[in-house]
Length: 295
Image 1 (cartoon, rainbow, N blue to C red):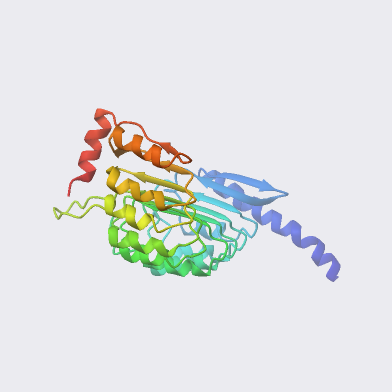
Image 2 (cartoon, one colour):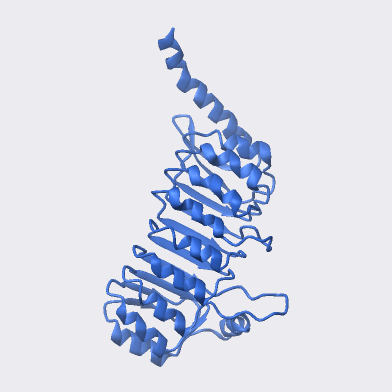
């Protein structure tokens, strides 16, 4: 009798996965299955998802990759708790989830998570700081993390600095300051870093730039860096020259940067083994950058 029950168990599991797959496809999800088990789910529009759908996703024990983009406002502290049992999950991508710092603890139970991205988390500002990311210290395999377009601030940067297992970190359009950037120097194993400019505050109050020449002195301390990208910045050779202190740097990228061609030429001479990706701003790009760099 025991043997019969064991033989039937995988079929039952696959049947459950098939039901969930059909449910998610009906609301716009792209679902990948292997041997009947759901291994990958991707949504470009999560606006139709609610508690029932998130609960169903949380039952998928073979799920390895989950992407929830497009106004995922239904994913809150309460519904995120459904994901605590996704012990096979390796990749998570989200956009617009409405969780608090305390709610992030539900994701700290995912032992195989390697990569996570959070776009527009708790946006607009609802008191979220990013301090809850400190709970991710319990994720031994987490190597890549992205946090962008959110009220994440220096408390969040301090929490990220505790995640010494990270190999790659990307952040932009948040409320961090240079004081927050200095926390990153604690990530002695970080190999890839992308920093973008802070969000401007729209309450009429000025807020300082999150990246300028002084930031480069902090980055020069991160000796393991191999790849560095700085976006929406205005920098001079005096600041850039500090990057000569990075012994392992191989790639340097400036997607949208106000840096003179002469300064880039000097930097290339200083760093002959580093691939430097830079091009002059178009007039439209320059106007947009000027707006971003206003106090």
